[in-house]
Image (cartoon, rainbow over all chains, first blue to last red; front, side, top):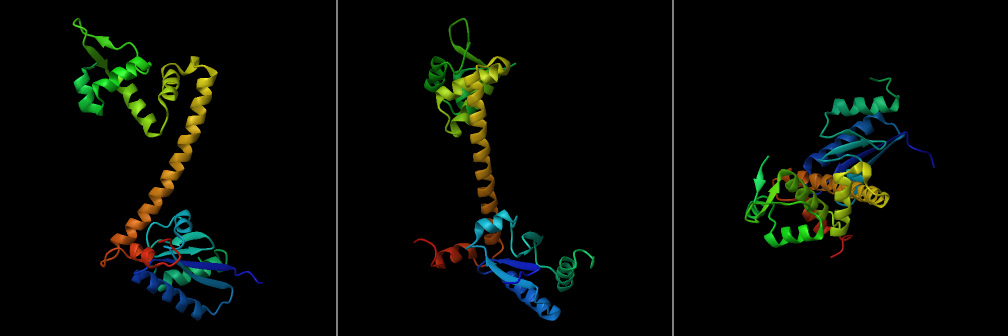
Length: 94
Length: 136
């Protein structure tokens, strides 16, 4: 099974509207990039509280790239796209 | 240097006269001063020792263990090897406890932030209550 080069996790909680918006934003950006090396997952903090805390998440939404907390609040579309491209190119997009 | 009577200690640390007398009898407090009329007088050093005892008790250390640890506290260079070993062991226990507390603090911080971020109460609690995977 091929490994995704980038795993994106959006940490959400029940009733968190910003989290849903962050997830939709990520979906839109990924659709636009049309890159199949990226995996997107919505994580419910209620179900994975320990995992969220281990990653350093203290508020929602939290966005994690390959196990590293990258955004601690709702990013702009531009910031999210730039961060994704930077991770995919190993920093060359910065 | 200040002097304290038993009543002062009660107000400062919430310890009763009986407890203070017991600590002295048990050997946790040594060389407690007396007035000419025989009333106990405690020093700042005694207060510091009592605070240490209270902290150690919060960590569920026994009075016997605390007595040994106080030896280490009084004179670390000349403490018996068993006391040093006990100190190392207790230090390891505290480190583990500290890690547990840090994790718990971080979890509660996240939960509190989730609750304060919502205008409609606490979504995390509702989420937990509605989660069929949770034990009832």
